[in-house]
Image (cartoon, rainbow over all chains, first blue to last red; front, side, top):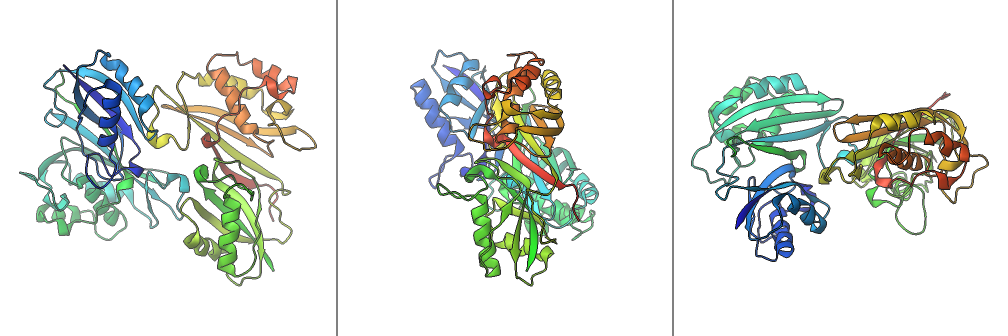
Length: 248
Length: 248
């Protein structure tokens, strides 16, 4: 028995998110099925990040246990042959048997993309949120700076989340513009349900001038979901990667 | 009666190209239909560039004649309300009644995108050609330089084209790399059928080391389609824009 780690990229457009659920096809379900076919065993993957319906990934991480003799590094190639073209394994390798992608200390990087111009660009519509009104990224960055570090992010936690604590640490948050495309990059050890999308929705309100940047501090201190902005649409969000901090 | 110019962006993935044809839905067909509905007249657009099935556009151009009293600049907004989300008008305005987008002197800019890395990225798959083997963009640029200027591009003309002459002028051609993404940008007054895709397919062969860059000169001089490389896949190509040189 060995444990294999997969780095998984996917276009979330046609999936009901990562985690297996009864109402539609998920990335995890497809992975489990194709791995089971490939290896001739009943494979159940454990994912690092249970991304929502419509969210994309360049580097989500999953592990599974197998009896196979195929070397860890070769599994990516064999599995990609069987996967639909909106899921692609970027890397596969053996990890210690106790490596758990959710309990291992890690830093995740998310990117939220906004296309900020007069008219939508059709070829950008699936991977960025189109926003017509002018956004000021300097104001957005000033507001974002209040979120850096360890805070109680209760105001940025989606309804229905079951967590012991809403304290989280944001290790980096930047807002940049390149032409019409605004990129919000958020790094942290762990995130609450919908946290990056609620942060993005709030930054969009501030960038549009609805509130001054200082309002972000009040929202944070209020610890009430209703104080923050709306949850920005899923298709603008991409899980870029997960870095494991104490990997053997 | 007035003539209106439209700048049209589209995701070519689900279209059988620009021009109306019997075997499938085209961008022009959708435009004609939605314009006719909007204006209550039978509208027939004339396109500047009859892009192939699967090719994308940021700025193709079309004109049509109408009796409408809606100001030219407002038509973009009204039309976008009716169009499917993979077509978006970027600009609309009145032009002189004799303005013809194919006979007017113009410079077109095409971009061919290649994702050059070990594994495909699902969110890039619709808008770039995935190529696994290492490509050397310096060799590609050296080869591309032979194409600059006025030449007989018969070697780069797809079968089935009916043209008086295969002489064309390439006013700019650059090959750049940003991370895993290679961009071939080609500018010219006019292009032969499949010309940019055949140039791209040939540059990919040279970038992969199949031929030295100097081979491009021989291919050009041979004036035979069979001497050039394959026609690169349609989905990597985007018509970026058309600049009219002597516009009133």
